Amino acid sequence: MMRQLVGILTLAGALGSAALAQSGLELVQPDAGVVLGVEWRQIVDSALGGELTDQLKKTQMSSMPGMQALQAAVMHDLDSMVIAIPVSALAHAKANTKPPVLFVVKGRFHVDLLRGLMMQKNPHTETYRSVELIAAPDDARAGAAPDQNQLAFLDANTILGGDRGQVRAAIDRVKTGHLTPVGAGLLSGAAALASKNDVWMIFDLPPGALKDAPPAAAQMFAAVRGAELGLSFQHGFGLLLNIRTQDADSATTMAQALQGLVAMSAMGAMGQGQSPQVGELVKKIRIAPENSRVSLSLSLDRNEVQSMIAAATASATRVPAADPAKHDATPPSRRPIRITGLDGGPVDVQPAAPKN
Image (cartoon, rainbow, N blue to C red; front, side, top):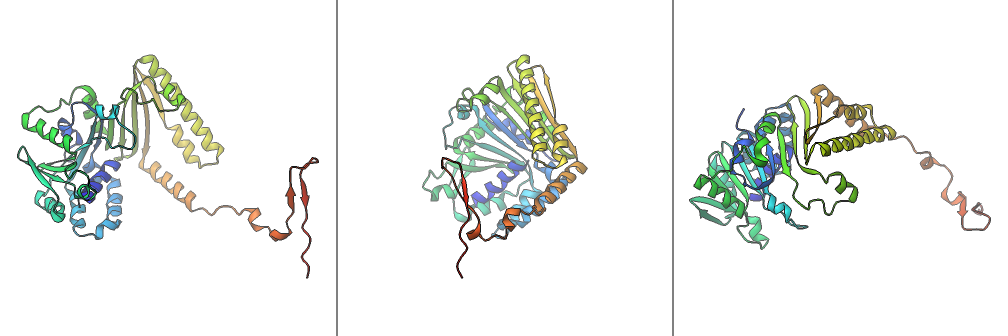
């Protein structure tokens, strides 16, 4: 059950009026290197929300015991989510290892109902600073430490989850009153980004992050220090990407490189005979340097989004043109056989007609 709950909440994080995700920022790590925010209530209340609700109802999980109640809680009680990873974990991350993640979920939760659903399989629990920590039962079955990943109902409006150490550190910040300053460092631009986007992310690029990248990519992004990404679904589709570089000259160089990549993408789309909508989409991308930042933006209204979806659907269902080679009436046994490697060049040999 824990995996199912985390799976649905993570689905909300992968996709993107009540509390904003920025209301949980004070609980994240002071040294956060990546912060992802999801304004879930805004998404549910948007035009996209109806389609999302229908898709959730069609999933196989809907038939599992207790899942309908859990889905209802996700759709009606969940307001926002913040997912954060400390920069120290990113700098020392190893291949095939999961970094220690903390997620802060905000809403109006029926704690007893959710707790009961998770306790059906009798997972390991413990108390830390008067807060009950519920361990993932799947971890125990896999032979891992039973409390490596935990959930905690901090109150009726806040759920903490993720790595055991990260959850405990967040509880420490609450109990001691040493909350993370939201107006400084990496989080300084979070409020503005969250106010205009449904899904957003801020990250700092740790030292050595490009050591395994291809030389061309490492050179292109050598001056990048971090980025901000925002996605909005309120009036169609909006994309905002702010790339932070080390100085104004680096921003200008980065903007030129991005403009070149966009131009190459446009030419590639035309060369491959893709729909005109792809070319029009590329033309709407705006790239501009400003001081040490590069801004890349794209804005589509609802009609444009629906037109692109319709074009993509029609392209996917279009019957491909017949391949003449597949309709060659000549039996394979009567087709010429080409012999190569001869001094005089390749020779086609016609097989003898079969005897009656």
